[in-house]
Image (cartoon, helix red, strand yellow):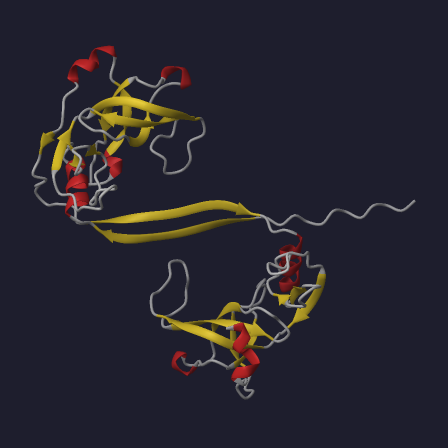
Length: 323
């Protein structure tokens, strides 16, 4: 009897996809966010007379431009809800809370936010709530810290929408919208083999048994033929620049001086181009057809960049199908 071989190591890595960008605001959104800073909730009246909160700049039915701002109450009614027992980073509250849709008094649509209650038994559709304002307000949706129960006697505070000119001192004209996704990535069989080969300074792809295209990095299946790919093929190490771009903006947490070049590189024997940074040559001398090879750093698990091999440029017909 022979001992069973140990199972292969399961690779895992924490990954973050982050793309914060600056957004300029039009007159409606500017008034809405500035109003929140001043503890005023504004909506906009549509062509049919309905009041939308949060406000939009164009009527969702007629596409007509909307500019008639109205002030609504900071109290309202829960229209639907869902319990969040495990709050995540940057969510409104650190303790468990309810996500609620609240139709504020005077509005015809509902706004999504958090409701601070001790448990799911304390929230119900139809309950009355009020805004809990943040202590420090900057002109953002987070100026509403959350909603909280108003109590049964709060129904007497209901009122309609009142006209508002939307004029405030020092209006908010732009915001930074932070898009971020944190997750743990675990590659499958094909990509695990690819990553392990890179640790040995080899590039390994997989060939489709039907169309014979070699995918690098491998995907485990051919997206064209829909069949599994199991035939591993070592490609490169040299390749050809098919297309490229010059980067002039320094990336966060990336210690590379700008400008630099990022390119699609078709490694010899591969049927798909991968991307990599080009070094060892002035950025304005990088060109389509340039022959390049990988440069590895001590302990690196993947090429740091690619540099020219000194070979003559590849003929366009040799890589045109990989652009």
